[in-house]
Image (cartoon, rainbow, N blue to C red; front, side):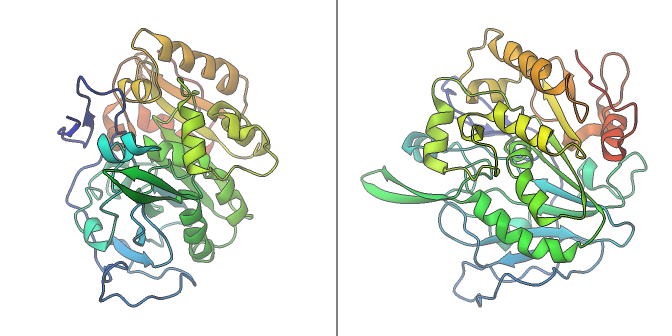
Length: 372
């Protein structure tokens, strides 16, 4: 069986793991939920419009319902926010948790989190988030400590990219899955943009599936924040091309919302990355990755024979090394996700990951490619 059994929420892979769930956010603690409202999908909830700036107490986690959003099961979801007046910076963090695109992945292997359960307010009450390195305001080495935080839950199975309701024939019945991650982001941004207006720094990041979301949705943030300085950091969501026809199957089920002006983005992940990097020269695109990531390699159909390492090397050579605004921090190993515990990681030549992330945040000259 697939199992979530490690201290940081990693997902273990069984011998049956031809498909597997990406790890959850690599974070620990019991989570907040202060100011939580009734679940939008519950009978007691009163539907309200998704409009106006988000208001919440400073420096405590608060759940905000968005009644017109959808999880895979059709129920509404929302956002977690932790606002501050320490700075104008904003960190938007996308949760990880797999993906699914057919009956087998959605309902047999259950390879995407929250598809059938949704993600209501009560789930956020127990979200292991507040003690994670990126959200620790007391850690002087945390480059995000003075920013406002936005936590985007994952419940659509589409790497936050989809705009489609797909009907699957599962267990003798038709079951709809709302692969509407991109549509949800549009709804969120309608309120986040007036919450964080004007010239400021907006850092879009996420782990695993959330790392893909930070890249695949970046064009939506560009449209929503025309005056902001925008940057993307993907934690173990490398834009290598899935093999065995999986990207074609994913795109067919999800109908991804591609950036305007990118006719070939629908053809693959490397094209999507290259378009983002080239069309946003003032933005920085960072990647954290393990060169033999056992989660992504198997999930994307790579045999465990070095093929994924080679593909990551090509992505580095083609998309990161030549670009002035894109760099990676790659470590040797089969592990998956770094950001949740970045205070404890360094490269073999002594580059601390926390310092590298800080350099990405500030755009320092020492923000450079790090390779095994």
